[in-house]
Length: 143
Image 1: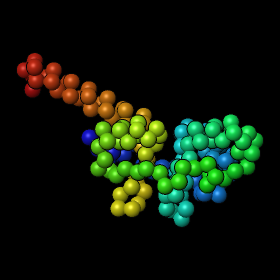
Image 2: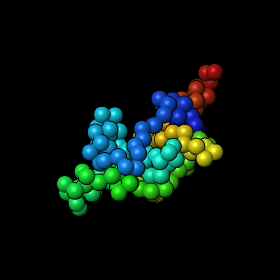
Image 3: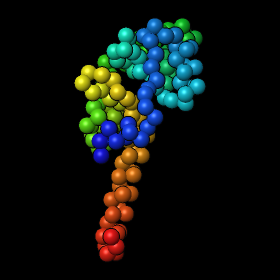
Image 4: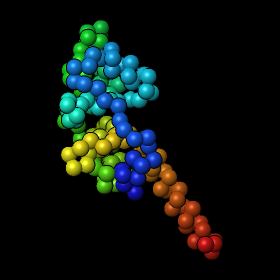
């Protein structure tokens, strides 16, 4: 199974902010959308990713000052990306080894989507369940 299949089963698009977006605005977007990260785009080009974790870590270190910062100040620049052909297992490995929960997906230099660790785990569980069901059908002799 590939990331392309995950993206087909998700609503299209992704949530992004501009590099100069204030953290207060980013927090509002995260809360309104019920998401854990936003992509930071500059003129349509992926320049970073900003997660709840990034904001919380800054709050712990800089307290109130964090709220006046911009997305650029807290984002992870040049994030690791995948492609639609990245397998679910590869995505899981990259995210686990990199200790991050969101993987932007690029195709021919164009941002096409975003998958979360939740998306990847769900796909892996669905894939495993399909295999179990197929084996049960095979063993029982049903077609």
